[in-house]
Image (cartoon, rainbow, N blue to C red; front, side, top):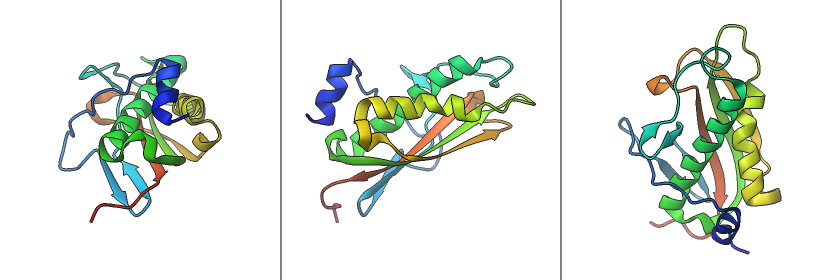
Length: 156
């Protein structure tokens, strides 16, 4: 079964790639790796939530938002090389805008990790960092970036 088929089976549609908010591209390929820019929880071109986790945003809500970030990152991968070129997810980096004293960043970033595991199975198991930060762009509570291994030759 292809990854496209798996997404369809799960009822997941990859969103449109959000336009970059600065002087960068959503994803870049080097060799057999694709690295995404940090993706925030955009849904239909709008920020899904703002605030700090542990204050305005609950950890459970933030976990769901991390899954949205991961979908946006997958959309960037798909736009660059096609989702079916993914061999495995190598690394996830999650940033959590944290209220003072909030230490549940790993549980929040699990939203991204669990979604990737659901889509890619064992190929979705990855190394990961979950980092608490003071602020994120646009006031969002979570941002996620991916590194994925892909098949095929890089275009020259």
